[in-house]
Length: 451
Ligand SMILES: Cc1ncc(COP(=O)(O)O)c(C=O)c1O
Image 1 (cartoon, rainbow, N blue to C red):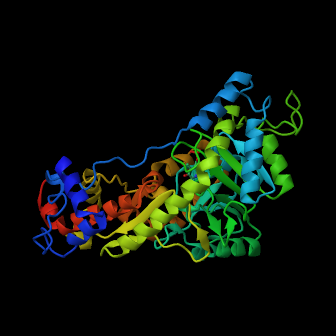
Image 2: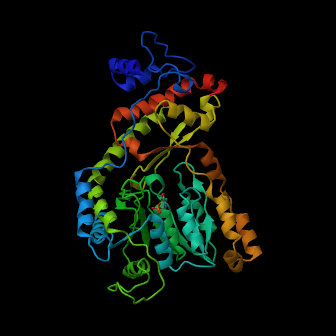
Image 3: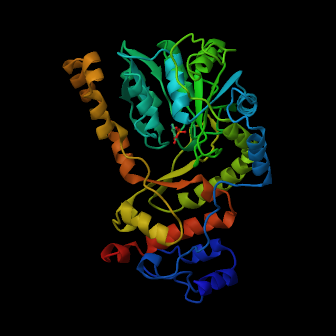
């Protein structure tokens, strides 16, 4: 491994090395004078393209420790006693251009609170993408409403907004577009359909911190927008969430609901509605305020690297990076997503491509499975509560509508890189592309092997 690094250093930039490997067919470059880096595939015993880990996450500096200790030493750890969660939610709302912000315990509780604020309940239908984290769907089921899946636009990995109108019935109440991976769903089309059909929109921006649609921050364009600050997210406090809205009534409802249904200035025993405890702690609030000081700079680095990687990957046959809609003026790159076409890799199945990539020092995942086909959905629909609300005929009709063929195909071809891989040097991107090209060149040999 050591000699591999030395050779790469000697050869100069990793782009040059990769270029030497890019001629078609098996084996090495046609230029024999130039030794190929990590000539054999690492999965077959060769040297990996990359031995250095990608940047670690989260970034922890002195200011984080100071913020955390401040809360610790005050002894005011609950937001009803302190001011850090309050300061975070107002800062976050101001930064993103929303009138109201409410910190929550998680992205899931932000979504659940929003669904409650809109009065989504039994008998309602809510339009959701099948290509998302399960929380988007779970919160609909928790309201005893039906999640109606609209197929994915395979080019962008987002909900196919052109197919939403056909999925609307007299029961439809709400659309939950997810700005998946930090790119934006087609909000022009979604907001237009919602307006014409009098539907509410909850933007699931849990992966889209600072992402924009036509230069406005996503989460501020629908009725409510929700964030997650769970450990993997681009803004992280271990767990945490937030709701943004411009609607005072919805804000008041969310504030009350997430605090056991208390009235606004009441931390005692007076309740105006039913609710729950979905409050953020002061520790989370203080940490987020400190993590926030780096978010803009980190986001810029991610974007620069991701844009550069896209250029490199577009040159590789069989690799198609996710397209962004024209209206998406800023991508948060929480996930970097692309299609893998095994036909250009000697028929090598995706699972083996992922393993080979990982062996080259480039961790990658196959991403989501089709949520609309998952057993949890059948389980929920066959529960006593759902059977009491939806007749057997209604459930059968629902089953009949529940098909997302584009999404099914996408789930078999998708590959993801995570946001932390984009926080380092541009040469990291060169190595990612180099690893993919290396696998492509030797895909035949790998396909024939047992590895
Ligand atoms: C798209 C999406 N929605 C909702 C959530 C739920 O957020 P949390 O894990 O903070 O509850 C997540 C988090 O992974 C997410 O990615």
